[in-house]
Length: 108
Image (cartoon, rainbow, N blue to C red; front, side, top):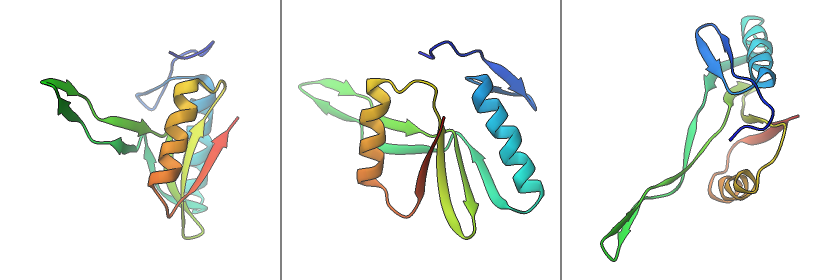
C-alpha cells in the first residue's frame, strides 16, 4: 500500500509515486551526462527462499528496490520513500544483512 502517493507514468513506465518518477527523470539525466551508468529500475533481491513445511507452501520473500546504478565505480541501490512502513523497515534490515558490495540510499 502506498501512502498518499499517486501513480505516475513516464516513458511508458508506471511509477508508484510522483516522487519516484521525478527521481527517475533525474537519474536518467545523470546517466545521459555520464555521471552514472547501468541504471536499472525495480531490481529484486531475494531475502529468503520459498519453502514447504507441514504440506504448506511459503513464498519467497523479496525486496524490490526502486533503482540500482553505478556511480564512480560503486554500485548504488536506492529507494524513494515518503513513509517507512514496518514491512519496509524489516526488509531493509534483511537486505543490508544479506547483501554487501553496494551503498544503500534512501531518497526522501
